[in-house]
Image (cartoon, rainbow, N blue to C red):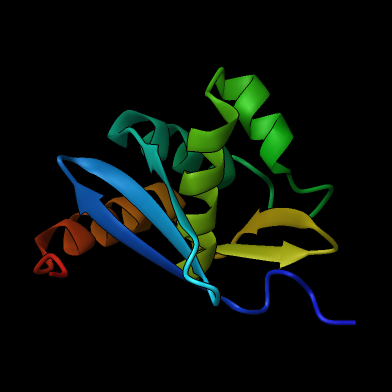
Length: 118
C-alpha cells in the first residue's frame, strides 16, 4: 500500500529569519509552516538533553515541555531529522551528535546564507 507521503517534496529555507518548511505534493498542492529561531533553539536543546540510550523523546513531549506551538516544534524537529542531527528509532527521537544545539545552529545559519530559490 502506497503512503500518501511518498510523493511529496519537502524543502527548508530561511525567510525573514524564520525556518520555513515547504511541502509540495505530486499534484501541485503545497503548504508552508514556519518556525521562529528561538523555537528552533529550544527544540535542539530539548533533543540534546535527551539521553542517547533509554526512552528517547517525541514531538508531543518536546512541544509540551518547551511550551511551543506544535507546528513550530514539528518544523524544527523535522529540520533536525533532515540534517542528520536526530536518530529515529521505533518512532522515538535521540540525539545523533554530541552537540545537537551547536550543529543545528550551524545548519540553520548555513541555510540562511544560501541563495533564495526564484
